[in-house]
Image (cartoon, rainbow, N blue to C red):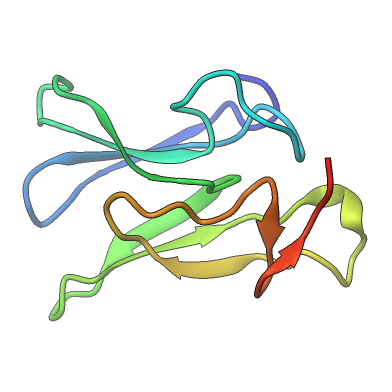
Length: 112
């Protein structure tokens, strides 16, 4: 719920279920470790775990048909203006932290 209540889900080439969970805030720490992440679970929804974190709101994602590399389109922080914190495309990798809410757009930082 919160600022990004929608969930995008898709089965990956490995047969597992991938679930995008957006942040509940614009740029603040999340109390729930599953917010602002990409989750992965077995086909039946069991064994859910965080695949990647620090993703404010990955609104679309998919796998390259040949290489199977996993890509996601992530929203930037709203309150920094039209010319800051642009949306970005990330190669999503297991265990990687992508920086939100502290780092955005090519290594720029936000102080909280």
